[in-house]
Length: 103
Image (cartoon, rainbow, N blue to C red; front, side, top):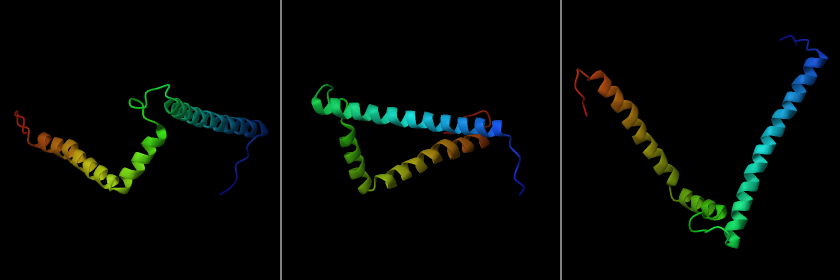
């Protein structure tokens, strides 16, 4: 496949856009990390009630504990049931609707 000829101005523009995109993603990740760090620190110091807003570290530990106890399997089965209820049941209603609702 032949390589396209790109002008120097276009290369600089694309480079600038790429750097700008990386900068935005880095800023977003930094804000998220700072938010979680401040949340953890304030919960440990007792500034916020850890009963209402639990510590992120405790949330992560609980999630890991639940994941090791087949949580993902249960989430998958729940998602399948919901999918069946929403899509298959609605399709059944659509095809069997002769001016009456089939439940």
